[in-house]
Amino acid sequence: MKVKTLVPLLCVLATASVWPLAHAADAAKDYPSRPIRLIVPNAPGSAVDTLSRIVGTSLTNVIGQQVVMDNRAGAAGIIGMEIAKDANPDGYTLITATTAASTIARLLQKKPTFDPSTDYDYVVQFAETLNVLVVNPALPIKSVKDLIAYAKSKKTFNMASAGAGSQSHLSGAFFQQAAKIESLHVPYKGGGPSSASVVAGESQWTLIPSPAAMSHVNAGRMRAIAHTLPKATPLLPNIPPIADTIPGFDYSGWMGFFVSKGTPKAITDKLRAAVVKAMDTPEVKKAFAVQATEIVIRGPEEFRKVVRDSMVTNAKLVKSLGLTAN
Image 1 (cartoon, helix red, strand yellow):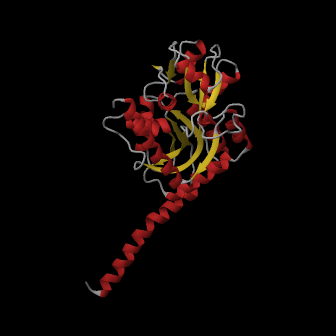
Image 2 (image 1 turned 180 degrees about the horizontal axis):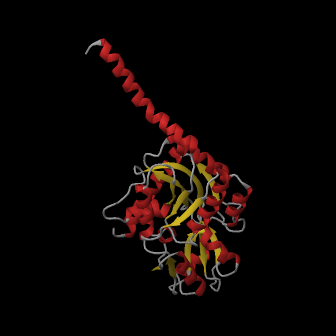
Image 3 (image 1 turned 120 degrees about the vertical axis):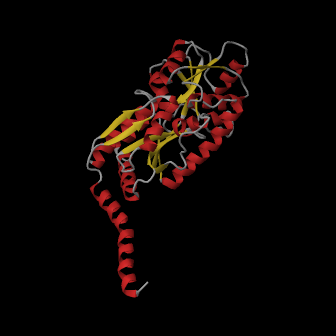
C-alpha cells in the first residue's frame, strides 16, 4: 500500500474508533431525557416493591426524570430478569436485582435463561435486607432457644414461606440446618399469604425480609425473636441476632440495580452517582429505618462479588434441600 493511501486510511480508522466513545459521551450528557423504567421482579406490596418505590421516588427527584415502576412478578422473578436482560442498553430500563430473583431463581432453572454474572451491567448495591425470625404471638416462644425447644417437642410446628425456592424458604431451611431442627415447610403463593398464615396461626413461624415483617410485628400480629445479621443492629434495638444463639449464623439478602449488558459506562456512572445521592437523603434514611433495612452502598465490582458469593452459598443450600430445577 502506498504511503499516500495509508495516511487517509489511518485517519478514517482513528475517527471510527473515536466515534463510539464520543457518541456514548453525548448520550450520557443528555441522559436522562425521558422517564426511566424500573422493573421490580415482584408483586406490588412485597418487600422488594416497597423498598424499590422508596428509592425510585427519591431517584426521581435527584435525576430529574420520572422513575416509573413496572412490576413483573412471576416465575420467582425470572420474568423480570429476562425482560431486563433483553432491554435496550440505553440506561432507560433498570431492574431491582435481589438475592431471590437474581440468584436463587436461576439456580432452580433446568436451562437457565439468564446469568447474573454476564448478562447485565452492575450499577450499584444500595441495601442489605436482613431477615426477621417471627412467630405467632400466641405461642410461648420468645427467643431462639425457645423456638428450638418447641420444635423438638414434637408439637405442630409449620414453617411458612413465599413459595418453594423463595428467599423465605431458603433462609428458613438454612436456619433449620444450623439449629438442627425439623419443621414442616408450607409454601404459599407469595409473601403476603405466607405472612397471613403465621398471623392466623395456620403456620407457626417464618423467616422473612424485614419489610415484610415489621408492619405485622409493630401491630402485634407477629412476635419477632431474632434477625439474621451477624451482629446487633440499631435498626432492631430490642431484637438480637440469631448468631447470639447459633454462632456464625448469617443469612441476609441484598438489593441493587442492574442494567442490560452494553449500557455505556458514562450512563451507568451517572446512574450510580444519582442513586448514591438519593440514598443519602433524610427521607430515604428514615423510610429504610422504618423497614429495618440497612443502607449499604457498593460499587460494581464489590456488588459483583456479593452476587457471586450469594450464588455459591445458595447453590449449596439448594442442593442440600434437594430442590429440583424447573
